[in-house]
Amino acid sequence: MKKKFGYVFIALIVLYIILLIPTEKVVEPSVAGKKTFVWNRDSLWLALENKFIAAKNTGCEKLKDTIQANIAFINKLINEVDEKSPGPSDRIYGILEHKIFSLAALAGGCPGSTSDFQSLFNRLRNVIKEKSINWKCEDIYARQTLYKIIYGGRAALEELLLQVDKNSVPPLWVNTESKSMTPGANILGVEIHSGDILVSRGGAPTSALIARGSDYPGNFSHIALVYVDESTKLPYIIESHIERGVVISSIYDYLNDKKLRVMVLRLRSTLPQLKTDPLLPHKAAKSIYEKVKQFHIPYDFEMNCSDTAKLCCSEVASSAYNKKGIALWNIVSSVSARGTARWLAAFGVKYFEFQEPSDLEYDSQLEVAAEWRNRDALYQDHVDNAVVDAMIDWANKGNKLVYDWYMLPFARITKLYSWVLNWFGKEGPIPEGMSTESGLRHKKFVFLHEQIKSYVLKKADLFFIDNKYAAPYWKLAGFANEFLMKTI
Image: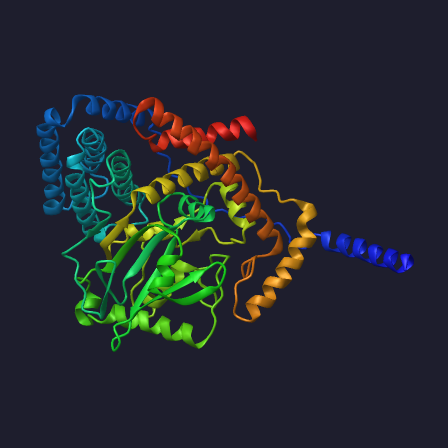
């Protein structure tokens, strides 16, 4: 009996050693060779924070006239852009950027003006997007102007939202001027139409990496396409998940999957293609809906936009519209920082110019039809962003995601179990298409993110106690960097 037990023990040791042998070939990623956008405006952020503190001390009664005068001046600049359609390098955009940031700091001292600021930003975004239709988006001035105004304006608004009472601004904003002729369904108070695109931010650490990992860091990590059945009026959500590939979800399944923010994008009704065929968005959504009903489409870990056999979330929308003659993502993101590319490659990415979910907000063919923001979820979003930004800086200093080598045999058994579940149409612990080694690196990434996030949240709580206002984004990022310098 002891002899048999010894043989079994030796066999298990040999099997363990065999399973320890790495099979994944690590290839140095070929990055895009462009340049990562850097604000490099630390002095401005500090000045804005000081301006916000001064505004809080001054009080709303004394600030109201100044705030309204600033709003009127910015509206005048927006009118000028609307009437004259200046090119992307015009100095008016720099003035608008500065004025928006400055107004957000002032408005922090008068919470009642938050709704006015949100309306102002929404108008600015809409006009800039409409006027950019004729811009050459590969031009650096066009790319950076859109980013500074739209991303920068959003950042200013959200810093303001996190400083005021959560009841100051409704969590839902609806663009009442956005129209569609396609079948619709009411979802959480919004008439969503077939062909609409849902742009969201997931709650997982990797969602933050997707949002922040390109040359132009953004706020969104996931894309889904809405299909509304013309007969039943039931809405369906077509989306691609890392764990399952492309699936058709009910609106309940979509909303139950943790979302920190959701924005609805819709093709402009003024587009020539929609004037010819107003039902084009519905037809695009229906085509991909029927395709997914017929056969399984795996998730595209490689981010290869030219291969439609596998689809990441962005490619679900772009492939559906491409077949109808509309090329979405007139701005395509890239990853030029080698450390960031190495981390993304560690999860299976091979192509470093891809359709970043955040970049769809800048596409001039689309307008924002609605947006949901929950203040508590928005705060988590900001913390996750700050943590991942610090991790990306750390990666770009040469630090790699190294998994626990001794866990490889156990992970391979888990991968086999996952493969069996996938074969039966179920989800496994290691996502379909992700290698065993990538799964272990992902686990390491999540563990490190949770460590830093815990530290940042504690520091942010202390900051609030000491200063009586929420730590702004640049402070959160500073706390995350502080942890990495002290601990790692």
